[in-house]
Image 1 (cartoon, rainbow, N blue to C red):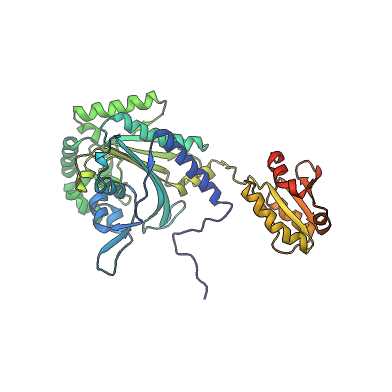
Image 2 (cartoon, rainbow, N blue to C red):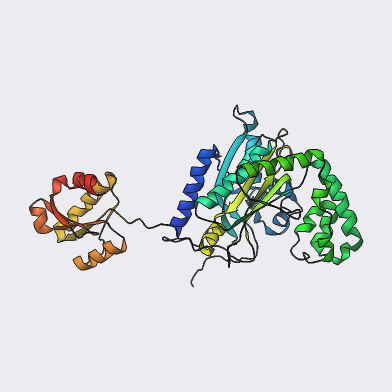
Length: 423
């Protein structure tokens, strides 16, 4: 009986995984420049964390979580997103007392959601995200957005669209919430079961419904922009001013609703406008979540962050035809002729590697011609040929694969010579 990979997961093989490594390295490099530090949280957490932190009216909590009871009868969940766990750690480890504020963190790792797999969307996926906790300044909202935009641009993406909205403060949201209830209530029976449940719990989520998005009431629903109080308007205008200062183009979309319950004020998405990218164009989403730390038992702490899928990042690169340079080749391939020479290359290979040289040798007892073909496949810059006769004479032949030039070198000086001349 053969065993296949679970649906909604993928193997990332050599030749492809290098793309991931380049993106991850660039993300870490940018975080260092922006002064965000890495945090690593558990892959599973208590289920209540996500019910409280993500929101019990969200599709994530209601339909998509991988939840199980452990042997002690405790309900645990594979993390479906990163923010709730980061904020839990922030509160539990009392980071709000750190001298350097705001606390700026980033994470990178697998997340799990039980949903229908499709192009660029998996049940296990890798997410990179940042969280800035402790500041109410709209300038840090702009910084968070700029980090995401810069990461995409520095990897070569050009067809990007930034969409922003304001969900307002508590007073603005309450006024908008009441307007939404009054708008939808007379005809809520025409909507799906989920929307009917959301009417009283979180009517804003109705606007995010994929099943009823074409209903006529959706088009005439009250806009949050019309219910922003003066403070919320000023905050949103300041954010737009900062984005303009940073030369980041954006579009204001009053209908943008993030899928998590804890957002307020700034909400944003970065989308791909590349032809053929697919129906789901969102690459990255985020926003401000003042109040989440209090929900976790901590002090009042404003926060903002984003999360992006590495899978969708790569899909966007493919849609724009951007090829990342992933195969730099190796420095040296050791080709051996004769048993004594083959034995000797085991130790010589180790010396090269310890000297900082990327090197490989034959392990299949192939003929010299096949060994040269293997060196070509590995994109070796040099091939060093050692036979039993050369070994007895303390010599080795080094061939430059680009120029065809060959030199004979004393074995005792080979590693040193190669270090000095391999560039």
